[in-house]
Amino acid sequence: LCVTCDNVSNNDAMIDELAVDMPDFGGQVMHTRCFLHMVNLVAKLVICKFDVLKRKQDNSRDDEAELTAEESQLKEQLEELSKNIELKDYVTIAEITGDDSNVGDNTEGLVDATMLLTSDEQEEL
Image 1 (cartoon, rainbow, N blue to C red):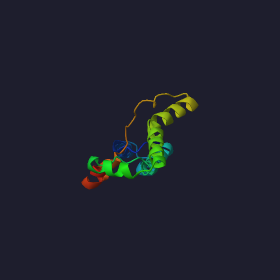
Image 2 (image 1 turned 180 degrees about the vertical axis):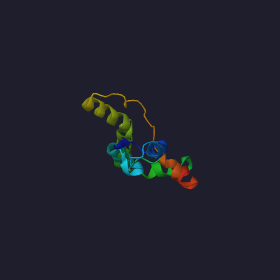
Image 3 (image 1 turned 90 degrees about the vertical axis):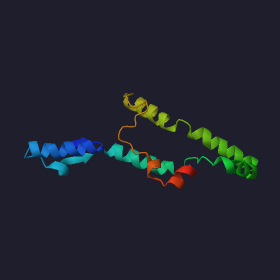
Image 4 (image 1 turned 60 degrees about the horizontal axis):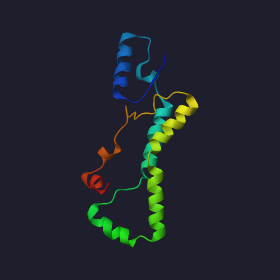
């Protein structure tokens, strides 16, 4: 018997309880993490490195004045492309699999990476 589930901590507790209730069950050794969930978390971590950073309001006027017309246009295009990118991914997956249960904002089990930042880094965002 093997159990496949995501990385939510209460699944670890469930596996431990199964090992107690079923002596033949191997416990954490038999707990398989969902590969697609792991890939999704890694992909989001990598993609967030390319997100457009929100500038501090006091410096934004100076920075904007230094941008050339081409840089300004590229910045606008990047911001436009980054809108609703997650929703587009969910819609594409729903079209391929026929399962539209993830089209909404499904954040169960996800970690807010901004909470791992220092207060200075959070202000910079």
